[in-house]
Length: 296
Image (cartoon, rainbow, N blue to C red; front, top):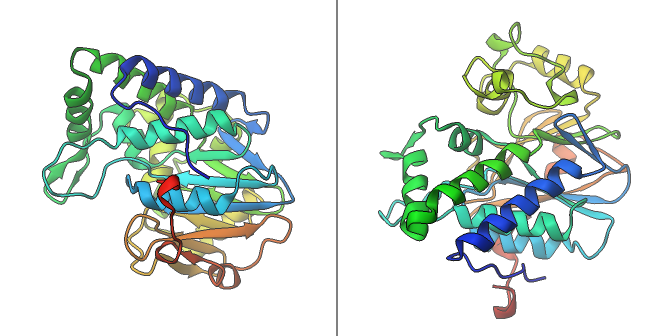
């Protein structure tokens, strides 16, 4: 299924698509607080970090077959290309692609907030591979749109701020970028998924949204506490380097990558959430999925 074509050099059209996508995310009837609730039947295709890999994005959308209303897709960490060639970072295009897809399938497409998007929207520096990614992203937008760049950046922030923190199901699946560090749990608001985000949640690393999307150090006891509080049987997370694309961290935690050559996408049957080990066996290597020219 080809994704609708957008003229990425047309500032007005790009802004319209981003605002339309943001509106669709906010008005999704399954939205409760800052979470999207997935149905208890059907299939959800869960990505790991994408980091502006357009071919893997297209492969995921092809597999998800969104023309079937029983299918859903969860996408995360869309921006900040891993390309170190020195070319402008034009990963805003991935946000526009996803916003267009959300507009077309407003109840089936769920881009969840990740640390790179949140840092971009709050102008918080990220340095990786010797580059400062937030400034590089802004420079890419300025390179493409010149005097119209400020309006496009504003529209980008509107779309990012509309993203839910999680996509979850009553059957026990939780798709979320990461979990707070165990050492942050006393300050972390465990009720955050049940309400809309505030500036306090996102404006500093002491905010609960920042704690959640940036967390890397977790304990079994902490995960059991969160699983009980959030009625979760299986966590599907990104935010970690996973050489083989999928990794079982604990019996109920999976880590996913979709951006590199071993990247995967994970189909999950929503009416039967299984253990991390059993679910991991269903991961599909994106290198095994072909694209026709009409799909690119």
